[in-house]
Image (cartoon, rainbow, N blue to C red; front, side, top):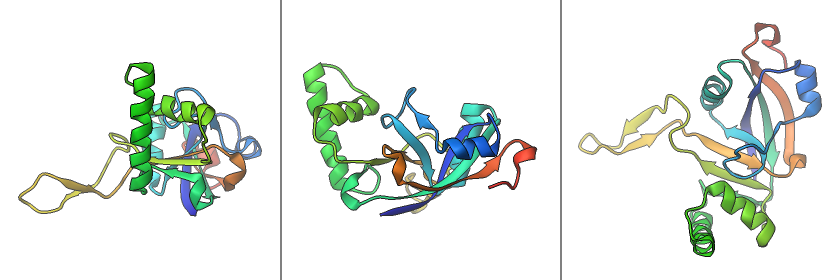
Length: 178
């Protein structure tokens, strides 16, 4: 599987050279899908939204792509069987711990307590991304198709990240560099 048009929004610290030298930024503080390298899938608008919300408009967006084998991606957005499996895991872990658990907890638990062959996790995130650009299916119903979706990709194995480059910076000095 190839995921291209991936965007990582990071705090605007340092120069583009130092950012590229250090490669993608690793997230371990409050990671939604467990520890890893986080990217927004396809929609640059969502990466800008995260820069506005998380970094108060002082951010850099880097682009990349990844190549991963089919069986190494836990796709909670595009693979309904894997989503069903993950739902079962949540129920089993909640039964063991006796409380409602977070997605991040379940993923980290599975990494260390079970066979976890995945190097990439992909999931749609609700209530993220600013302008969602919805369209009604038909006028008589309220349900909408979300044409801009906030899909996160958490890369566990850094070696899968290719072509990491500066795509955008809120600092005019960096504009156009990549």
